Length: 399
Ligand code: ATP
Image 1 (cartoon, rainbow, N blue to C red):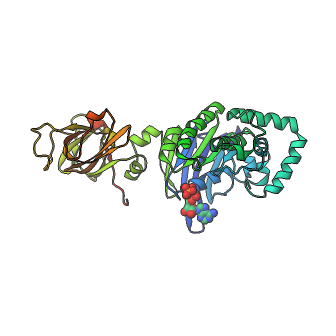
Image 2: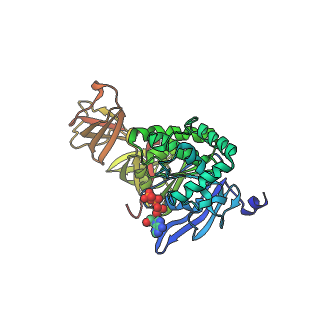
C-alpha cells in the first residue's frame, strides 16, 4: 500500500510517459495511460505504430528507455517477466504441437523461469516439465484443470495439440496464460492466425472468458473491428504515440483527428469553412458552397476544418421530380445535398451508395430494406444528415 501511494497510481495498470528507442527508431514515445482493474483494454493502430513494443515493456521483455510501468500499484522496473504477475498469449500461440494439452498448460506454471523464451529450447523445456510434473503432481493437476475449465476445455488434458481445431488451440494458449492466475493478461494479435469466420466467433469467446475470470486485459490488434467489438476502451496509436483513448462508440463518433476518423471505420471527410455560430448550440459551416449545421462548437481561430460525416448517418431518399437540376446539384435546406448515384454496392445487410454532390463524392450506407428500396446508378437523390452527426475536426499537417 505504501508503494501504491508512493507511485500515486491512477489505475490498476499504469504507463507513465513510456518511451522506448531502438537506436534511431523511436518505437514508443511518451505513452501515458491508466487501465482499470478488470478492464479489457485494446492497443489499436497500424503496423509499426508501437503496440507490440508497448506490450513487451509491460511484460518485461523490453526495458523502457524512459518512463514507468506500474502493475497493481507496484513499479515494476527491474523486475523480470516472471516477477510481474502477467500472463501472455502470443500471436502464434507458441504451443508445443507434440505435447498434449495438459503439458502445454502446465508449462505455463514454469514458463516465466525461462525468461519468456517461449518456442525456444523445446527439448530442455520438455525435460524440465516432466520433472516438475512428477514433483508436484496433484497441485499441478488441479491448477491445469481449473484453467482448462475457465476456457471451456475441461477434460481435454490428454488431447494432442495437433488434434485440436484452431479455436481450441487458441483457448489452450489462453489457459496456459491464465494457469498462474496472473493479475494482468497480455494478448498480442491472438486472433490473426485464424480464418475470418472463426476469428469473429473467437472475439466473443475471449471476451466471455475475460469477463468470467475478471482479469485486467491488454489486447494488441491492428484490426479496428476487433478492438471495437471486444474492448471496454481503446488506445489508438500512431507513430509510437497515443492519438486517443476512448470507448469504442466514442472513438467512432468523436474521433480526435481526421486520421483517427479514417482509421476507425469509413468516413466522409469534406473540406469545410466555419461560417459562424448556429442559433442554438453548435456551428454553421460551408461545405462546397453549401450551408451545414453541426452541433459541435468551434473555438479555433482557424476557420478551415474537416467535416466528418459517417456513411450511415446519411439518409438517402429519391429526389422529387421537381427537385431541380440534379446535374448542377445544390442545397434544399441546411444539411441536405442533392446528388446523383454513381455506384451502388450491395453488401447484403448493408447497401452502399457513392453519390456525386457539389461537395464532392459522398459515401452513404443503409441497412438493406428489401429490393424495392434500392436506388440505381444515375438516380437523383437527396442526402440528409442530422446536425448531431456532423463532426468538425481540425485539419492535420499531414494526411
Ligand atoms: P505490428 O502490428 O507490425 O507488429 P506494432 O505496432 O506492434 O507493429 P512494434 O512492433 O512495436 O509495432 O514496432 C514499432 C517500431 O519499432 C517499428 O518501426 C519497428 O520496426 C521498431 N522495432 C520494434 N522492435 C525492434 C527491435 N527489436 N529492434 C529495432 N527496431 C524495432
